[in-house]
Image (cartoon, rainbow, N blue to C red; front, side):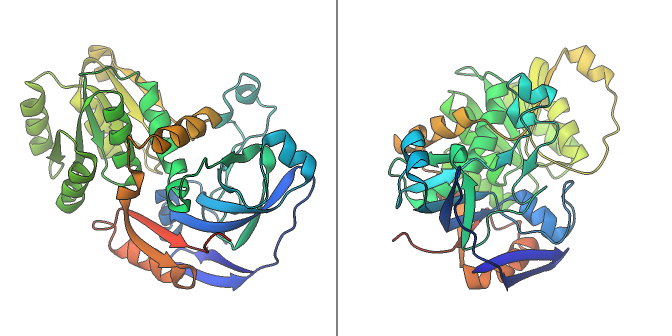
Length: 346
């Protein structure tokens, strides 16, 4: 079978790998669509904190079940031919976090495409308990459920109330979907970024309240003051992974506000931590997502209340995957969600 591999920063290729087979407790899946995550792009660029090489990327995907043991199918209500998505975060089950039910922040977590090889192959095997019925959603919609889960899980930490003002910093896929999650909670949502085109696109496709161009710290704070009447935002969500954007979230938060850190980076932040005390901020880290996030969002997208396919700006065929990574790396300011089409369902 064909597969995608990042050999080192800046080098992606198609190579031939051995097709896997289903075993008791796992199912054989045929990939349909895969989304290039910011972490996959970071692995390609050499900037992702958890990157190692060579690595098969990919943890946002939809697939069709090709082979599954009858007993597994019956136990998990799965069947051959079913279109599904999957939970790509492999937890150990025995660390302190896992034993308390916080499996998303397992101390030994291995996410597909990051700490272990990912899904960007024509066929993969997955543990049956990690496979979720797509409930009739299209393969493209299902490939977008995982990034929506990351955003949704992050926004849920802040317990957003209707009418609150929320600022998301980062107009990439995770940021845009975090804005969508906050809006679904009834918030008045603004989004900030350094790229005007991405800001305009985000506001348009998610019908947000407004945009803030983060072109300088002074201009950023000036716009925050204007939008919030000098009060700051009730909730700020960081979806970039840079020290500067984290500090912007702290600065933009209201006294008594909530700050959620979703972005992943490799650099240290140097700041006056007493500001957390002065504002009595509630600061939340958000990692991965839970099974309930996947199930809730499959139902939410199925309801038609949110069209997550609007985040897709570019689609490539499997044979063109190396070019997809190159293009995305060079034009990230104009490309939002890049997906790879592996195959059509049978």
